[in-house]
Length: 221
Image (cartoon, rainbow, N blue to C red; front, side, top):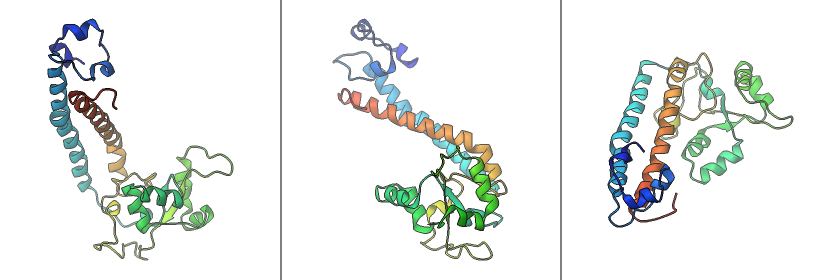
């Protein structure tokens, strides 16, 4: 709103348009605030967007300073906040992460089965989980059938290996175990990544509303 003070419109000011929601509305013909909307849209589409994307690129580039040490934990025990049926529904509804995840990961038959395979990891995940109501699970465990005995991916370099594996840990996984080679990177950059994505969402919402306002579409968004 600070930018808006560089513009003026007597009619709008008389109507008391002081909040952002009131300001992002279609202007009347000759409104002095049309220029503000156009400039705000330009900043969101160029300056701010470029700044956020540059920061995300820096975070991603910093990831290259770390390297997997083949512990196999992320393949043998992945955790999610949804059961397999729900993930499949999300995949069918167009959720790309769910589609990729269910293309390789399979659910453990039970939590007990997951504990038998990786007791320490299951305990660590549950220790960071919001308390579960009795009889209700909020975390579900999965494994990849393509991990070999040497902890190497047996479909590495093929189309069966999805992008979420290639970009790990830049994925919305619930938990990364403390000994993972990527944990220091994730711990250091996670707050910055969350902030950057939050700013992207907010700026995209404002950008769309400003675009609609300039097109004369009131009450949208």
